[in-house]
Image (spheres, protein in one colour):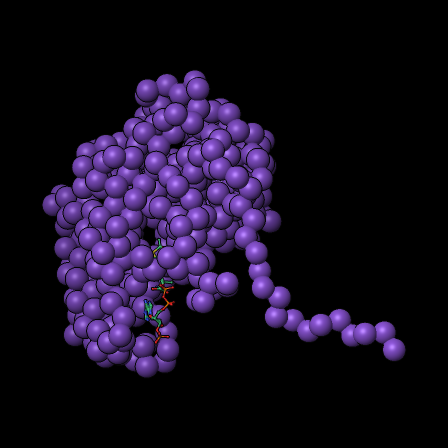
Length: 364
Ligand code: ACO
């Protein structure tokens, strides 16, 4: 029987040791650790090592140096960053540069793919501002180096910690659309690079990882807390979706929103500019929840990860149209782990479709 919604709701399509999304309790577990144990406490490379555990025979405990070396290796590809790539959106350009890397299923390939979105996103941000790319510093942590490569100057420890919290928070999330795409691709026993390219392609859609850029546009259009209710009401009356709200699995607040809000508050403690922006965001969030409740009474719609992603990445100085690239820098860890899990233990994913088209005409 065909899935009645066409969205595979409630279909279990894989068993995984990697993460569990409990949509009713609003809880995310990543390899035996709850999100609140990891976000703000663990570094991204340590969570990547946690996700990769058991999937690569030669996996070192500490990925700091090997991931740093992989950043240096993929940096060579930024030499190909010409006018044609700069005409693409940043996430399309990151995908194009990633497609140039050799495919494979070993640890070296995995680390190059893990390094790639950070190195390419930073180089793209600079190239669009007419600046030369900054080579990686392999001794730094991944988050600190991503910020340094994008800015051309070292980030503060607080900023690096905030980006670490973000990358950890988005590193894996059950069978979301991009991870499912990566697993389908990996199920054919093709390489990790192919699975990651599929993941990037699914991620960039506005219903998935493309949402946080438009969140900034929404906040800018609203401008002040007093305008929030009327603006949001108008948007829903036009049939628009409010970016950063709603989720297929969560029927309560997305726990990642709180993890990111906490990271933002820690960052704001040392910043003069952020509190006003945060106050606007909180007012918009409250108004959006009220308007969604009034206009969509049959559906529980709450804040998702993308709302505070937008605020946090903006505070760290990333341009909104590059937010999806930074998301990819975190989620690639999950895509790679899921692709390995699928390739090592799963079967070819090959569901069926039900034909509803016309029957062939019979010859006269
Ligand atoms: N704003 C307004 N209405 C919404 C929203 C929203 N953000 N989200 C869902 N709805 C409404 C739909 O219009 C629909 O209403 P209807 O029944 O009156 O037609 C109903 O809720 C159900 O919508 P579906 O699309 O079936 O719900 P689904 O579970 O597939 O939606 C999704 C999940 C795609 C994330 C949706 O909530 C959405 O579009 N949100 C905005 C985009 C966004 O924030 N994406 C990021 C998600 S998090 C991530 O991927 C990392």
